[in-house]
Image (cartoon, rainbow, N blue to C red; front, side, top):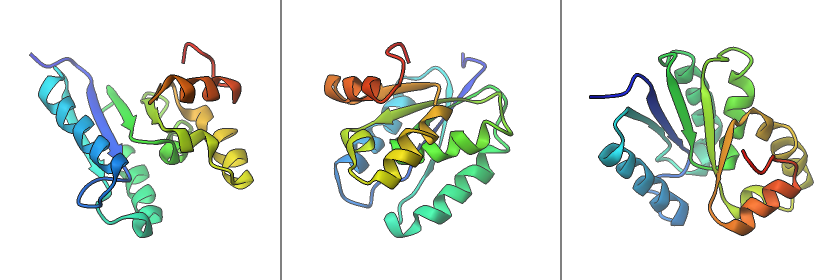
Length: 146
């Protein structure tokens, strides 16, 4: 029997685009389908970085209409803009974000100031891909229990 809440997985990097994060996101989604007792859906970008602005808008629009009992899993920190915007409209959604090293160490001051210092505040829980990434998140101000 399915639980009452749904999991909605969002990935900006997904096959057929080739790369490590793309393969990881595909494996995460497939394992959610295989092992979750909850309904699982996805919104994925298969068109690469050039489509990212359009993909972000599509995700924002799509999440406006998901069921109230939805937990959103973001495939990486670049997507943190989504919960930051939607938390003002959809306070009922829960956001978890998988964080990779570059999500917290990318050297652009624009990225650090906007994404890490502002957009990450919309995320309820983080899944760090390593202990080192977790430690960096904590030094950036994320509570260790998040």
